[in-house]
Length: 594
Image (cartoon, rainbow, N blue to C red):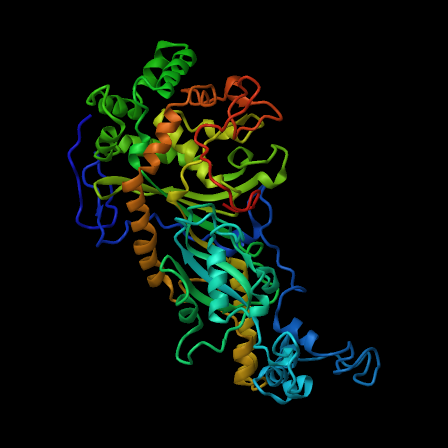
């Protein structure tokens, strides 16, 4: 198949008409082709969920750090007085009920407590002097002289190239390790707490694999928001960023409700995976993968009609046309240069869209992670929306992006979903294979390179709703003169929403310069995707015999109980690593997030 070289001046992906005519071209100075927008689902649908899905984070009003709860903590006994137990001196047990509207009285109590706490926390305040005096302990400053910490959500972005995942690991270079060092250097974490992130209650919304990126991830911990080394006219974000490399950024630090948990409170996560379209070309004739596909097609095609249908598949026809124009003895690097000039036909793109849509819904994804059994309920995950972008061109190579919106993801889940997606489309395997993978038959699915995976953002729909309701009550109290400006400001919380916070321009620029540009440069130089497929195509074995025209999983491709799909079949009593499983160290083994 021959095709003309096509480029477009505008970076946005234009609608396709008929043939793959013009693709938008993105070079160093241009912006990234947008991925199809995935609209947030309604609050009601998040709250109620879908059939078969586990609840994300049910709201318990008793645990919420609302003004009413704070008031109870700030106040005293049940009788309403400051000191009061039942009928005690501080309050009258069984007194008249408060006739004021819900939360108002307790919010005022919280405001009064905030005023008193402010005196205790101020530098050189009377409370501090009385409590601690002027003497310092042998180990350093007295506790009364320490700067106050606050529980905050830290919104961060990072390029994962060169890091062994996101979660902190003392023996490895990780994103959280890099950020925590910056907190300490900036004085946002004290020297006493610098030896262990656990001392400041570090937690995260999602853990990412080695080499995986994030436009926005969320950490929570207790930070000193006014460190001594910070200049008065410098924000805490700018101050911390001065200790970080350009590929890791702090977007915002937000005071959060005391009960906030970044992982359990997350309603859904939005990921994107970008890959070159040439990976959908079928394997080169003469490779073990090509021989296996031809054999299983012959075995599963019981009639001439089904055989003709398989041979007439758009991707098979496009692959034959491509490889017929190449010398059989052509070197790998020469083949790759020719692949970069290939453009995905509309018919192949349509097949790809049909296959990726088959993942949507609530399913058992145990085949798409490691160390899980079919009966493990934690493998039931909800994929709310998957979309495929229009192709776009970068440095003469065509790419597409897959957008994933799901409740939560298991370790390696997205990379394995992409792995099966690529293998199935390039072999003309129908989407009916996808439901088969959710059944009890254990198969080996290779995970795609981490290079193309980007966490766009975790989304907090229910938390933001609660924050809005609590803020509205505080606004009412302020308007009524029942709390002052200082108490109002101290208790107001921001929604965790990059659009509302005005961060999108910064994040988009970071994605262009620090994620996409570096991602494409690495692929151009190291041929990550081409080498991954080359390794799979040279594998000889029955693992991938589920790539057949019927979309069924034969017994020959399954693993028995006790066998590890991440390892090859036993040969002479030994197991070796499975095809496509690179020798990379895993972050957060057994984690709940990609």
